[in-house]
Length: 101
Image (cartoon, rainbow, N blue to C red):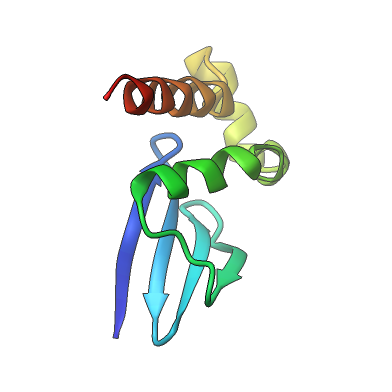
């Protein structure tokens, strides 16, 4: 059985998802492309804060994947805001709000 441990929308078309299957968890970029980013067994994140930390550490990797996608380039041109920049702003606000609690 596959279950979703954590999920974070990056933009209107893509999310980063932590899926649990058996004893392992998988970090997957889902949306326009479905890309396995990493696999965790013993060191899988247990909290939303740990998940957010993983996403921040992999920020460049996500930018690389999304930056090469042509549909994202056209999205940037038509919407005026880079989805990765929007992701960074949302991630930063989550970390800030976590620190305030």
